[in-house]
Length: 236
Image (cartoon, rainbow, N blue to C red):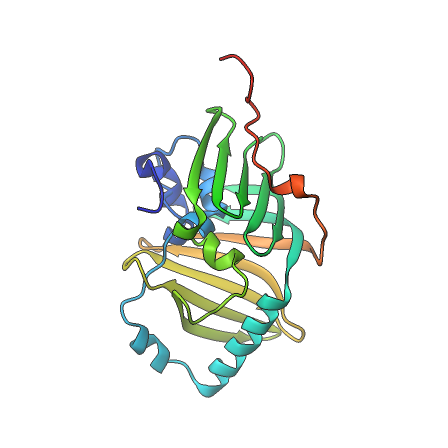
């Protein structure tokens, strides 16, 4: 079970594709969080690794190799993001990543929700509930996204590669949880640059996260990735 209290995220699961996780309609106020980090709390699945591999051409394999090299060249980055879902919901914020293992996501005001991966756990803060949820990174997609090196043949499988003018879309599924969904990474090409990811759940609901103002090679203060509950030391 990747996400404790899965019922709490029902609303999110519904709004966000399975990969970004458990968002259904009566979620306890964590729609935005589960949405974007459905990417981190959601498991993907595949019916057959061998079947998926046979669908890839020699050119696909070459491009997958280029993408893997590119992803491994990014040790840290920050970007503004815009998150959209099938229900018409839009959220904005800032994401900071430092590999291996560290990430921070702050949603734009008036929201005070945020997410931190500190190298061991993924911490999700719900300000409306004044409550935190903790998830082991090894049990989430965060492990794939934040690990160093990224290995596109370990734990996940590339099921599709689509080339469009100046763009490549790569679909990934996780091997460990059949029936979950898929993650689509969208890259600008020549040169490669990550621009968007989309999560598609078992019900075909889609959530997209588009990156803007991407800056690579950032030296973040260590405090960036330390989780401290905003209500720490306050009386209830």
